[in-house]
Amino acid sequence: MKISTKGLYAVRLMLYLAEHDGGGPVSLKEVSESLGISKKYLEQIVSNVVTAKLVRSVRGAAGGYQLAKPASVITVLDVLRVTEGSLAPASCLEDDTFDCNMPVPCMELGVWRGLYKVINEYLGGITLQSIIDEHSAVAADSYSI
Image (cartoon, rainbow, N blue to C red; front, side, top):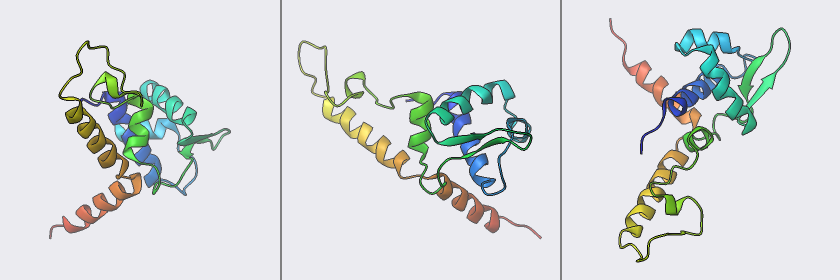
């Protein structure tokens, strides 16, 4: 499994919005300049997360974007599902039917089910807030005199 640039940038966008939550809407221009991601690319990404109701758009002169839910409930899995679609390691796991086109059942299905479970549990257990908290703790420990 390889996460696309779109998925990686979506997580960065969401973390930026989470860090600036409570300070009002954030413009894409600000995000673009701060993260070094083209504004045009961010427009594509923000459209997806707005549609998924992870981000809210605020119109007007002081408008921009802000999280639609607390950072403590939005997981990396939520964000990646919006940008990447299914994270299933095998196509037969993409829905709950486990539909397989093979004439003989595969012996390794349990391996792919296990991997999919680990992916979902791991990424589903990491919230935006937990990433911010961990980064803050590491940054606090890495000072020099």
